[in-house]
Length: 109
Length: 139
Image (spheres, helix red, strand yellow):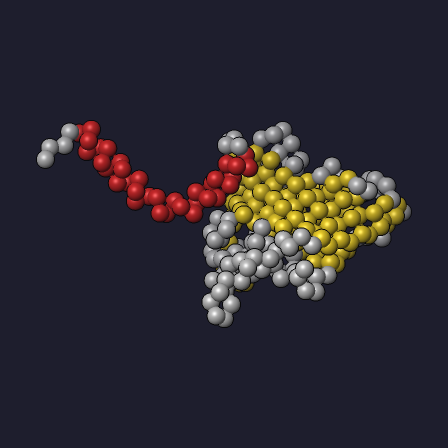
């Protein structure tokens, strides 16, 4: 597990039924591309988050396959349809097998 | 040594092919990835939007946006990177719009390509040239 990995997610507290809400996610991660070399010329091995998913009450909103060209501290912004109150579940999958999760609930106003 | 017209043409053709090969090496990788995504289907020019800055000062974080109405998936490629794939966005049933924004790395000035799989199963492609002042692959 890479050090200091911390997911941060911005979800509105409440929404009207059938409303589209904007979700913003950021996770601190070095996203080592496997292209860089250290000071002695050795290639630093690749270590990235290779997949990100967002589900709402178990149904898929977005599933992203990520490659080394995604920047350090991967950021995603997208829209989800909210028809009922429930939980957004965000999951990040690391190359080394670690899984980072965050859950945010939303209410119907 | 006598060459028939047919032989001359064959030799000329072979020489041209050999000359073109090195330049095509990188492009072929991107084209192969696109062919793999589309299954070799034809791509329309409209139906997918890619927003990226014209000039990016820092290639380490270049903000991009993709949007394709009704698409089930959008593939993003950086044709000039050592490894062209950037990301594939798969939209689920609860996606309110087929829109996503993220930040990517670009090794240098190049074309960024987005290919979308639309609702009717057809494909659309767009590309945008981004000028990069400082490359972002730590080469």
